[in-house]
Amino acid sequence: MVLAGGWWALTEGDRAGLAFGAPVVLLALFASAWLPSPSPRWSPLGLLRFVQVFLIGSLRGGIDVAHSALAPRLPITPVMIRVALRLPAGPARHLFIGTMNMMPGTLSVTLDGDQIEIHVLIDTGDELVGQLRALEEDVARALGERLERSRA
Image (spheres, one colour):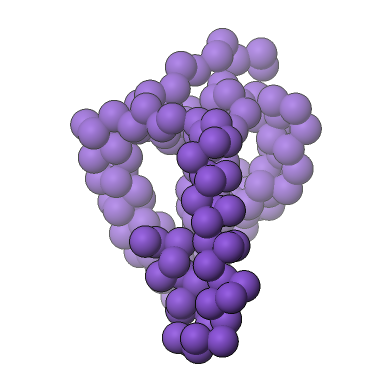
């Protein structure tokens, strides 16, 4: 029904598209049932914790950005740091990197194997790495992933 509804929305309800759309929807239905899909192991409590961390972090980040924008002297000390990722490649790592990019003053630049290079506007040293490690743990808990040992 979702696939058929999607097709109907794409064709704006035009019946002329049914001759092509009906077989395409059936093929998509067959493919979705036949092809293997990763089964998520979401942890309800871990996900709730992640949402809480995300919302609080977003609020703090917004306040931090507003404060920095209004401050007469902004202590910007941009640096590039490399951090060894402990999350396995896949959805958990993508969620972590996407969430980290939304933190004020951080932006992922390169992902090279298990190493990520991050551009940071305000160098807080070990404090930032600690925050990234905590975020990585929250993502792992939410998705039911195990963290690998850090190589760095």
